[in-house]
Image 1 (cartoon, helix red, strand yellow):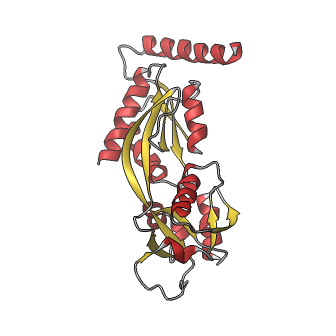
Image 2 (image 1 turned 90 degrees about the vertical axis):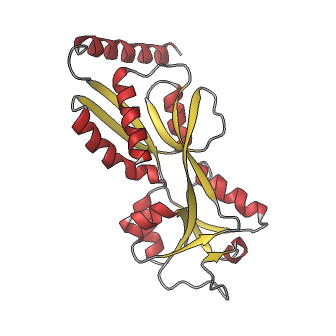
Length: 236
């Protein structure tokens, strides 16, 4: 416990020195941002880095791509400044600001057919015997998918659990199974080029993406600047 507090205090002292030294100059320091896997947020890293280079070149931006629940723990303990994660339900120690919602799509190998279903939107019942490649049960998306399947009374078949977008795309394109991911990721990731995309569920499965910050640790001046840039990038 003492070690964790000491880490946080040292980080704050280091940032205080930087803020004071650069009070009459441009903002400088190090700011860490977490971006949840399997979301549009992973596509935000390049626009954020470009905008930060143009507006605040002295701020070093550290970007971490990890699971949402792990990112919230890093925010809670002060080891990370902010994160874009799935979910909007209250989490002890952090504040969540909903940013947008993402619709999840079924992504399958090219040429895949699902029995007699030819509609653009597949009912979840059509996925009962489809081999699925999904994140592990600790991931918010997996819990969302499992809950949606449970409400539809569909016993889905998970054949592999994959956390990497590139590995997931390679597995889908090799015909090992289908996956359920945000439509923007399916359309934007080169790993899924040529795959079949279909909306799944009625109503559709949607995930909320939120900005996560500490509810008890103040953001430094550089972190406030990064948060402003992040929100501008999302809004535009």
